[in-house]
Image (cartoon, rainbow, N blue to C red; front, top):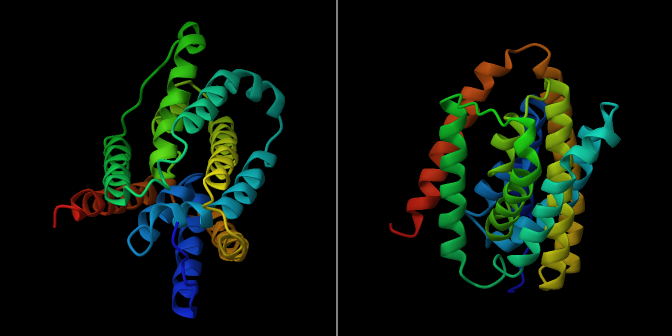
Length: 251
């Protein structure tokens, strides 16, 4: 993978993107990888953007998981899906670093579009508990494959977790668990493919600071502004970004 020159202008942009992404995650509980990959993939290869995501995603998701008790029971329930995620990422190892950047960017745009459409339509599914045993590994594997191709962890894990009838705090914690596992597996895949050089690790560690600052601000805002109104703006923006990325290779 070619070396990326982290000049001051690029570092400033990276900081701004991670602060925005952390802010959104603080408000709605997700969005860090989606926004980061969407915006940074416009100016750098997706594999570089995914490498920068590793440290901020790990730490912010640990923060999100630790905010509520009941972790052991939730982990047992999610174990089949998490194993599927790890397997899917392993099966798709090398997709981000394989050189087909236009295909990856188009796939990322499509994932953003689908996710935004579901969010704007307030689509809600319900999965009966008896179907979780066989459906969870399939959803996990699909999420892993999408993550391996795009660096975005949300599809189809987020709609699936929303369909399980978890309460608000359980859902936020479940999202953190899923994103944390996806981050670890993606980092392992990128490291195996040589996409985590020292420069990327250094820049990813620096990106943690604006991500945490943004997340703290977002959590404060969440207590004052209705989340539903913010979600509409968030999903609309993701839809526009997804449309741009999907059409970029055709323009």
